[in-house]
Length: 68
Image 1 (cartoon, helix red, strand yellow):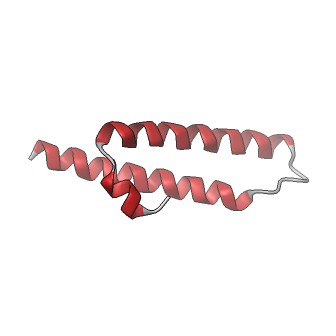
Image 2 (cartoon, rainbow, N blue to C red):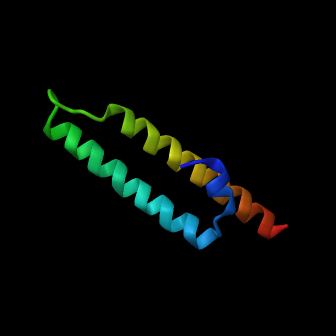
């Protein structure tokens, strides 16, 4: 997910996307633990973690801007 897309989302949508990304990360981690030898998607775990960080960064910025 690109940062420009994230930046345009409202806070409730960002919260939903963050929860969905965390679920996806959990699924990938579970899949990796089950299939240690034949795990195909280590790059997807990195991508999802970075997406979560982008979402959380934008959420913090929007919440701080709303307070001020």
